[in-house]
Figure 1 (cartoon, rainbow, N blue to C red):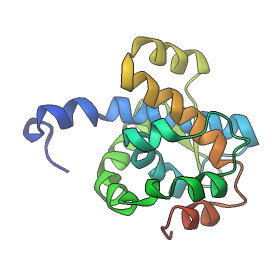
Figure 2 (figure 1 turned 120 degrees about the horizontal axis):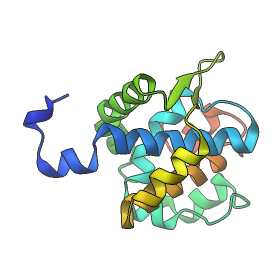
Figure 3 (figure 1 turned 180 degrees about the vertical axis):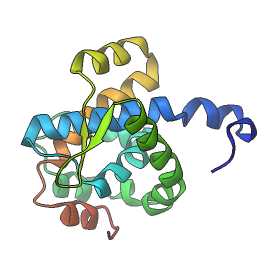
Figure 4 (figure 1 turned 180 degrees about the horizontal axis):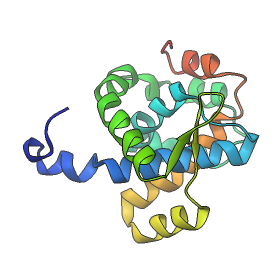
Length: 165
């Protein structure tokens, strides 16, 4: 991880730990809201590579009734470069999770998963304070969390996206 002072302006704006944390917390909130469990640590690392990739984010289904396998079959291009994005964004995901743990946005649950501990009102206020793509990222992350909860396991979800734990 580059020291903050050495980051490019774009990197500092798009990948700042606060924004990335809110995005991951929103996914955790959606996951827990849908299935009552915490988002697995491994799935948390998939949030930013999916959500920050504009084409993938914009092509996500509008409802979780569309299954992950069916959607990925129709949108195979979403897997192109996914592994590379995942690897490139790992340091930012880690930094965002450390930020979230420090400032009480997320916590590690008893099962080892990530749970959002920020009140929904705080997440909603954060969404309202954002504009454009940033607002869309956090909103779609909430959906992504719900959508991830519809698959049978973390391993299945990861395999569908072409990666392994």
